[in-house]
Length: 350
Picture 1: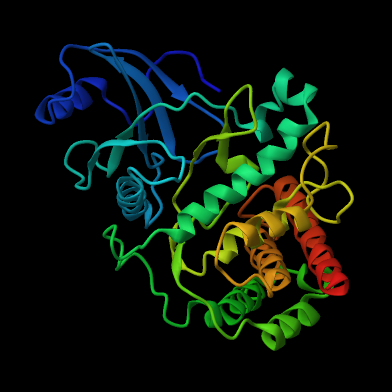
Picture 2: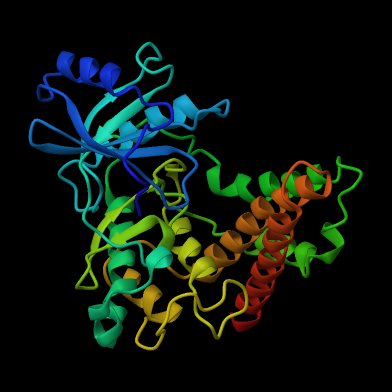
């Protein structure tokens, strides 16, 4: 989606044009500059220069402490994905220093694609159940391709801390949940079902062996763009949580966020749902096209529910302390409850 062409917060088009001059990216004025919207806190703008279209991505005006480093990491992974089988926006150029716009930023190629979580399915996708089925399998293909890349060979050997990464997960997120109780107003923990049982199950059933690789870190329908008239992916977007860890967590994230109306948790946000692959079919497709061991696939889905639920509960804790919208905090608290119900469902189903 786009906003009306107007002044774009944090983007001086004249300054940007001069920076582009130094990188030999066209000539003349920047035209048709339009801010893109659609759920990200970062600033996205599409514009034209010298007959070529660009998309700029920069941090929000009020940057978080890690905003600039996040931009640098996103640019690094997009550069590393060039010529890979992972559908992604091609990186054009990046600025790591803060001199130009008081932030790190980068330019990428525009993607003609559809965020079905935001705008719904296209008419072609609504009409064809086989197309909807392919959509889930295409998402699995993307994370298989990502996890298959040799992160050392593409220059991302220092992109994460894979040693002990999987073993750290439960304790890390349990400590986050415990930390919310530092807010004396926080009362939500006792309302979260199965929270201690899920943590114990995760500790007791953690995969013994795993192979490090690249993962997106927040892989779901909201962070992919589909071709308008097919079930194929146009691009995976929003790479800010990408790291080196266990790539099967991206499959687990699909389990946690899969909007199957027959599962507790996320609810059926895509209509019509018939034709979409089941979680079992997603697993089968992954297993058939990867050499990774999927015998612990349930563990990754439960871990994703646990992690996501705890992350979302942080906003509820802040809302109870008067530091965030109460309405939004209540909504995310309800989502957390649903995610832990989904985790318990996965455990019971085996």
